[in-house]
Length: 81
Figure 1 (tube, rainbow, N blue to C red):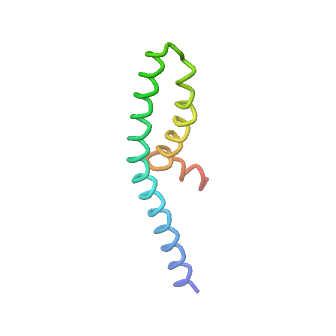
Figure 2 (cartoon, one colour):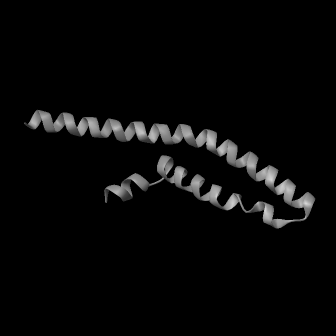
Figure 3 (tube, rainbow, N blue to C red):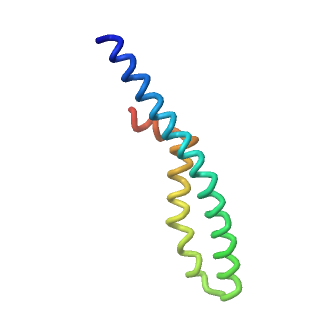
């Protein structure tokens, strides 16, 4: 029974490590998309003199912040607590 509990804990730790690794990999691609989107939307807002064009940056920034916190921050520790 003790060995089975140790194996279950090991499996849980590996799953958490895989989740963090996946999040960090996703963050690379999403960060690139977010950066390019911010540049393009800012350029469009300046050229058309319409600040409403910048609105998509707001939800994208929340997703980016969440993914960053999950991959490099303390989100997993806060969830465990």
